[in-house]
View 1: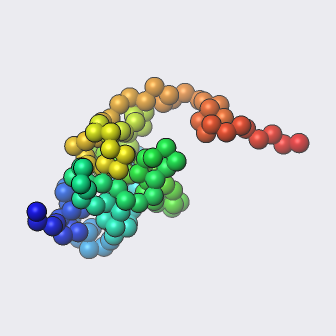
View 2 (view 1 turned 60 degrees about the vertical axis):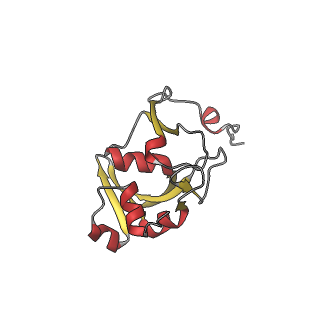
Length: 141
């Protein structure tokens, strides 16, 4: 099996990235509500060709097992689901109101062809704080 270079691997995941963006080391995508930026080298250090799926995530994971990656949005760093980031970039959409999941049931899989996008039944609803986090809401006093 031929090993892909880092640039070939990244372009396979994100076909619209330019050579100049790759050289700069940061990739950003503009949405209506702001720009999402992430570090290419950091992404590639966590995304590897896996034994079960074409690309698997070997970076941080959420307590529920989702692959997580750090991004910069509106000047603030935050963590988001790596599968969601891939789908957002590939579909050129912020995917508001949708969930992104793996259809192959491999918790490490970030292969675009294995992602399923479904309508989020809770989108647009205001859930109580405790329901969103599973923790009891703290009260003052």
